[in-house]
Amino acid sequence: MNINRVIYIWIDIIIIILGCIVNGINNGNVFFCFDVFLAVLIIAIATFSIISIIAIVEIYPLISIMVQYNSGQSYGLLQLTSNSGMVALHYLEFGKIIMLGLITMLVFISSTNFLENEKTVFSRKIIVPISASKFISVVSVISVIIAFPKLPFIGYNSATRFQALLPGNAWNHLAIAAMLIAIVTHFDDSFLIKFNSFFVCFWFLSHYERVDISSFILGIVVIIVRRKKINVTFKQFTRVFLLLIFLIVILVFLGDVRQGVKSFSIPEVSKEIFVQKTATDIAYVFNISIDYALKYSLLLGKTYLTYFQEVIPLLHAKDAISSILSSCYPYPGGIFIFSEPFMNFSYAGVIGESVILLTILNCICKFKNMYSTFLYMFITTTVIRLLWYGLSFGFMAIFYFLPLLVLIITIFKKYSIENRVKLL
Picture (cartoon, helix red, strand yellow):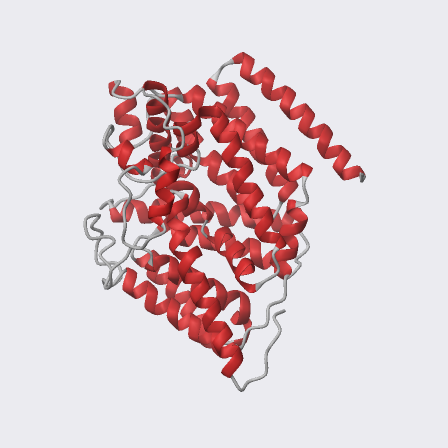
């Protein structure tokens, strides 16, 4: 057993003891401070990893709950339902659940070879013809236009937001998957791929689609750092932190623009960095998920059966978490990562699902084929969407789009007359 593993074991033991102490204090603000400490510790250990993104995405909505609890002012349904008494603010339970998720993740990465396996999958060499990458980048452009066919910056309408040119609501994921493959294969070798990649990013942002492109940028930074084997220093980490702040400002700006806000002030933007509207909506959704689990009987796995239906294109499952919540509460959309396990199995579900999902990710890293490599990278670049809007949002890409793109590459490999080019 190496010295690092021994250190990690002692860190785990100390964290678990501190967690028990914090749980005994039973104070929401104490949970919040401990959760932030856990997130920072995980990021320091994992550095450039999907784990760091997950920690950020899990802790961010908790800030909105904390501000609402201490000031009575946040945003939207969270503020309205809490202040009016329509829905109790479950600040204590929220903090406790986040703590369980983060501690489970910390123990998992420190007791397994997950981080080393992840480095391997990010740095893995893949042989892809440049013609295939160019073609796939064109697929990305076509897909994003199908997903959002209106001209850029012509206004936002939530009723027509997802009216695509063709049936289905996952064209944006095909665009992300295709753009990802084109970038990690031959971005440096082709002007067409560069142009198409920037066009797809522009098209997302110009249609006020913030979550997909923010998640993609964070994920691609992690992938590039690992693939290029860039030395991780405090300076590099600071740059990524500033990039994160910049992305949040972009989220705030686009969110205000699409809601018709025409004047901006530094104090208001600064406030919205911490109480970001999308994150606040997700905090509200998790709050009503906790409320449902405490008021009604646990679902005991009922909603997980709908995953089999969600895999089938154009089929919507009536017993999905979103349908259950929307029938009982005002519902803005979205599903926080811990909503489903808590509504089904309470606190045990949070720990269980965390272990299962991390184990699945670790297993994906161990497979050395092209599909599993692109699959892990895709999850890394869509983690915000998956953790805030439900795991089923990735099903179309995982079961249909990625296999299709790998098939396209295979065909190009077989019939292309160009020499195969190894990735850097």
